Image 1 (spheres, one colour):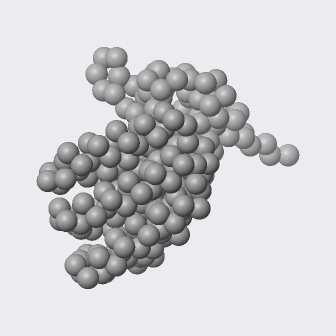
Image 2 (cartoon, rainbow, N blue to C red):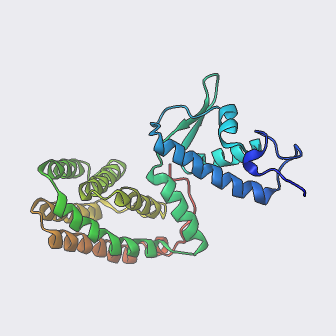
Length: 262
């Protein structure tokens, strides 16, 4: 009876005949190894910034071909799980995936679905009021203080689009933190940054109107009024979309494109 070695029985770094494994098999193996690496990092609670196994140690641990391991590591690098540093002390270092990784995946999927920027904003209108309601339910005085401080800074920077926009994003990040739901911390920044790639740049009057809507939203969150917060956010976003349909119809009609969101 003929016996063949299984993947786990093969010598580290080589396939049974010392040749490159078929591409399809290597891709399947790479995904399996990538999942095992993630499990190892998670279960061992390896902190971000710590160097992961050397290539030799990883080959010994996972018992796969060198090409399979390297594909797994490249995949995890793209997903934001690992970062590569070059030089004498270089190697693969553990990282925390960020919203940019999700934004990249969403944009890639939407590009092939021929989704428009307008459809992206519509999805935000469907999702974000629920986040506002949760934020109102769970807000602490410290949360409200953070939101209020950001609103004060936004008011001071109405005339500076770049500064206003960064503070505006920080406000939404803080609202997501206040909702205390991890998905919002990744999903909503991703959707907003993809929207930004359309080239829509609200003027100062439009920014002032948005600030007024954010103040109303903050007031509902401070009052622990979920329905009021959800309605305030929905009105804010619907007014924004209506204005964009009038002022930026060409930008709204743009297809979502896979960008570098880092």
